[in-house]
Length: 97
Image 1 (cartoon, one colour):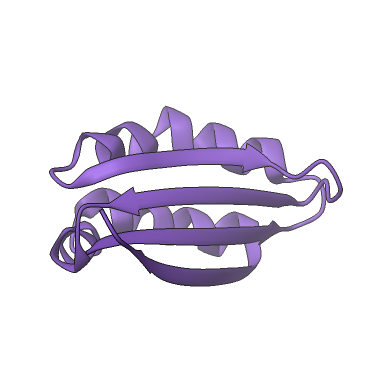
Image 2 (image 1 turned 90 degrees about the vertical axis):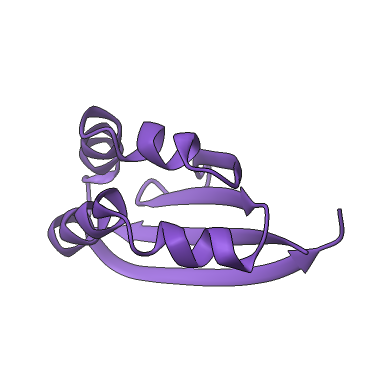
């Protein structure tokens, strides 16, 4: 069963663009999209909250999500979060194929 993950990043004031630019320039987004089992990995800027970014991910199955969590680029994202993010809210869904 596919996995849909909704991630809300709440950023330090004024740091939304810097966080997004760091994710893109570091290659984290491209590396995640290139992973076996990834079907969607896209960031969206909230129109209501200038300090929020939404990440939507779709993975082939739970194993793909597990393997994603073991990658070096996933760990690099953790370092960026420590620098830019004040809170992260993650919601996981199972979706049928």
